[in-house]
Image (cartoon, rainbow, N blue to C red):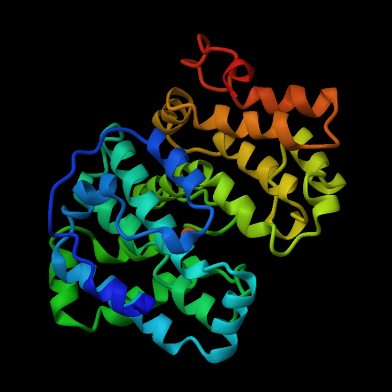
Length: 318
Ligand SMILES: [Fe+2]
């Protein structure tokens, strides 16, 4: 069965599964050594997805399936060559983000569970079009593209009528548009929330994302932290995507995410669910050219929050 027909046949309106916690994400991620094994949606996110009006789910699918159909031969051959399916990886990421958002929205008051589910489902809608126009064009500003796709489709009455009952649509589009920019200082609460949910999900997906990078980075440098990334991290400066050159760089960038969360609830969540520990554990285990100073700074990611003083030593766990 082709990927697109398989996606078409998927219905989330089957059974309701209660949502428990995010630890399963790390487990699921480990099993996702080949994203082709992954079926949308993961059982745990169904409860959150069911809050979304069906017309919006169909709309999202329409873009995913449409992109798959439009992907030209060279793109498909490239996926085959790498035995890696970026599209499925991004569907998986969307699924993760919906769940992470749901768990955060239970704690973060201004955003409802329904608003969270919709924002997270739609946040990468432009990703699929970007990926299918070239296999490695993964650094384009997909947030902007996603926002423009949503704006364009607001001509469709069946979609805008539903969205308007749930959001101020302009605010929602802005949140999607800015979710991937390097820094956001604005006050849009949906933008702040979405950026936190996206990062929470990415942290949990770390192993899978590193695996994806293995296709493009030579193994002999994979676990070395580049000088520029090290310097930025130590001096608490933002690590930009452009300066990342290795898998270790990506790990260090993600270890800096907890310092960027907007809501203290997100940080506490990432600590209590051992997500930050997971990153630090990967650092301890794999990074080759670490030194005392870098390690000391990395460990700070575990104690930034005021409520995070009584946590166990993560090294014992990994
Ligand atoms: Fe994104």
